[in-house]
Length: 366
Image (tube, one colour):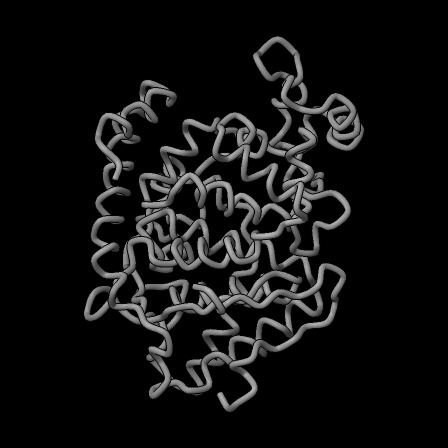
């Protein structure tokens, strides 16, 4: 991926178009069971089945990833990149905080059944979809995806998949708040299945320890380095106080605070996140949560990561070394690494060729 990354300065608030717009537009069963051993007994069977399905989707997607290519829509929808950029810019220029949920939406999509746009599907009377699973109930930005889809349907109807739109929107959202640009291979098809419980059990939770995180990333074909790199996406965005309530007030069930959290930072968080407060949010990267930069790693190195999953990066030699490297060198390799890991994540479980469909509306199967 050398040469595909473009970064914007940390302080930049002005969107800059990437160069290409200048012209017209395996994890074994035993490990999966170890992960599920931390789940409530009544849920273990579903957890094992779900993780085995995740592995199966990854293996299928690994074979299909070769069907993705740069410029897949060059002939059928030549203005694709321009339309996506213009639409995303219209929203991000008004609200920079949208970048984080749009990035998170792509992540949540790829971890469940692969990058097939299933996170966009709405629930029906007969099925509760991923969108309504507890981990996804705080997602926002679906209106941005719908706006891009609507614009593309007017220009080239029935051509561009919602899964590809999601991948492109995530990339552009990151770029517009100071992050790197990367080339997104396209050609994904949209899935027809979306199940809330799969999202509930297969998305890495904010309270996960390093063992669980490594196993869940491995289940979809991502490495330990990918885990450390993609966690850096927490440099933008906010967290809800309810997510860290136990970490602050009842970590071991005895009214205590997580000892891995810097005491002074814990005191600051307690002033903002009172017990039982379900509405308040707090910055994940204090001081620069609207800008994509390397400060996240400095925060984690100081034991000030907001989630337990952030703090967990210090509990493994490889992830800890990566945190220290980026915090010590002002993110010397972070932009390039993030671009490469995002491309890799975007290949998870993809549908190509005649698989799946091209949805007419992203929230509904055809």
